[in-house]
Length: 299
Image (cartoon, rainbow, N blue to C red; front, top):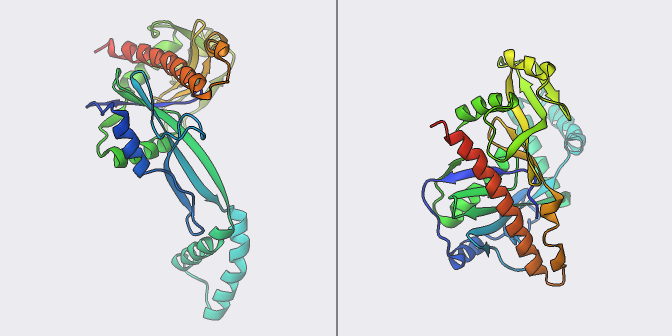
């Protein structure tokens, strides 16, 4: 429920905010379990709770959704063990080593035959459309996983004019400033974690954890390295790590935020989860807005 890593995308055109439209669209691409021969399958699931059968959940100006991905697990060691005797038998039959293409074909056939016996693993990725700020927030630090969610949304909604929320050039310049404790987003102070890397292809890397970042030891690395990640904190709000590709990672909500709805209890699951979602998204939206405004201030 409380997002830990996010990818954010700005929209160049607004999406519908009609929950009925979203519910119908997402239902058409709902998740169905893997069949015996399927290797992987994705579809929309229930964002609030498995017992609350809604594919879209509206909360003020936000629409929440979730994508479930299920995949078969075939360890490389298992495949290799099964493949070796078949490979040797084929090479003996043909009287020559198999070509790379033949080995790949054999491996694919073997994988397909093993699928019915493989274990499956499921993951759930939540996200929401913020109509007020015209953005999509995906609960994943992985660009690939977030793009998979966007691809499924695009199929369901028919159109999704979404681009990463931050300009990488401006972000890289600000990361350097933030490590110098300059031009921080409003409401944020410098945290205690940072990572830097020299710009050449095999450049040296350095990582600081629970460290005072204003010390000469840290600052001297700015002479020949670029900041790839830095932590920022709000007083009694969020702490985050911002990376040079625009991801917001290691999100932690202050106890004063997470405890605000404790008086509601859990007797009514829908009411409590709805309240927690609103609390989480409001705090996160405020932080994201502050970060993006700071980068836009140089336009």
